Image 1 (tube, rainbow, N blue to C red):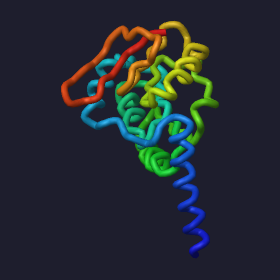
Image 2: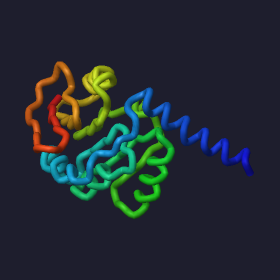
Image 3: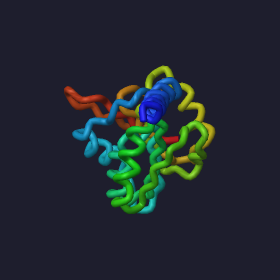
Image 4: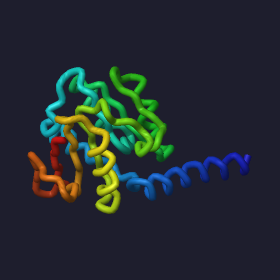
Length: 166
């Protein structure tokens, strides 16, 4: 019994560490910022939405509620399991236990990132390489250096959001 508990603990802590090293530690987007995100994203029914590091999936579900075919990638086991279990009740959603660095994003219309400033330059290269012309990227908290936001959302006491167009 102890052996199983130790393995489970190792899986959870290992996936947490791996996520933090590869992209960002799990720090959820504030629920009060979902409406701001939806307004900035201007999602149209049928568009493809990706959340790179979706955590508990709240933005995936919000995008699906706006009509998107929404996909979230997560590699930290605990929030992945939470999002996956919640996804069974939400149409047009897919929660994938996968490192988004290995995902093909070429069909994306909207991509959401909440990464660290250290990781954003690598994400920038991936997105520039893979996204089609006109795809939109929303960055939460930190701007993407070298890109000019077409819109920004600043609310006192809340983290900023930046909208970019490829």
